[in-house]
Length: 211
Ligand code: SF4
Image 1 (cartoon, rainbow, N blue to C red):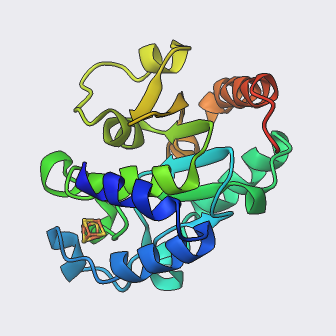
Image 2: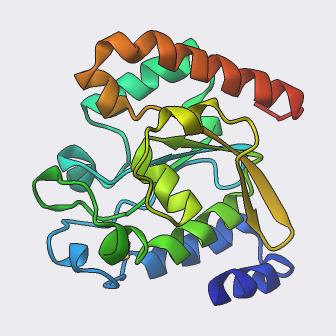
């Protein structure tokens, strides 16, 4: 993971906000997959550049593509309510997606051609933010974090308490929950999602995070 090695060196000499600015400028030029042809703009991320909690979604939708900010459409409004429930300040965490460019007609991003094409960027992104906990919102985010396709039920990953992401010596817990778009389609799952967010809050407390 060459980009990560470069970041490890940069970390010693450049302040984090400056690294973020250079990173965003570079990513906004990306043409690594075909999604660059249909996007209005690259939707990099939103929130605090270095924080203990990072949320990963799927891909920008129509509103996100227009505004250049993740989670501002209907799913974003539901995410805001979820964060209110969990008493987590959106401005104190960091949010990004598995791919940064909107797939045509809001289809799911393709695993090899798009999710994995955007994966070095995601790993660098996480390494910059240095979260203690990463929340994978939905199957696509989990696939991006694990770097593998998941065919079985998401439920078995939601139940796990030992999922980790390692990049060199850096390590973070992964907690899986439903994507807000899924909850809009399946409102009966909201009670389950509330339990996932209770678990996230509990883990944040155990890890003595600053949130
Ligand atoms: S989705 Fe990721 S890899 Fe594809 S063009 Fe956008 S930034 Fe580049």
